[in-house]
Length: 185
Image: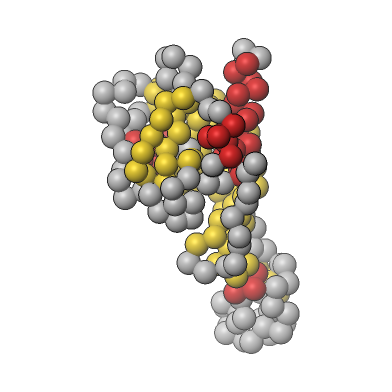
């Protein structure tokens, strides 16, 4: 069964001990939204956006990639990553998939979104993951970014794959894809 990794990092709302605008000490650490009594600034600390591609080949197999770094070192995931400023989720999806796999996407279709927690650098931040079912162009250019990924599989995911996903949101997206593909959607 899928087990969520232990989150020993500091929640992002607990990391604001001083106002980022005026530097005033903050008495209510952990409060959402963050509100500074000195300068009246309010910071909502909402989730950042990330994307994931469920890339399906012409045989109906899904691309799973194994993470070469934390969080989720050695576990399965989907190509994807964070949305940059001034970038749409669709642009981020195409950029991240190309950076991680050198693939160009010829079709994308929204599948689902899911909240997630991303633990990195001692801080846990809220994320909203947006997933797309994708069809790649030619597979001739396929190559993994070995700084981020160390292995891949084209598979019809099994329970073993699902139980070894780096992020619960990725697992839920793969399960949704399996249900929709079984229904012929």
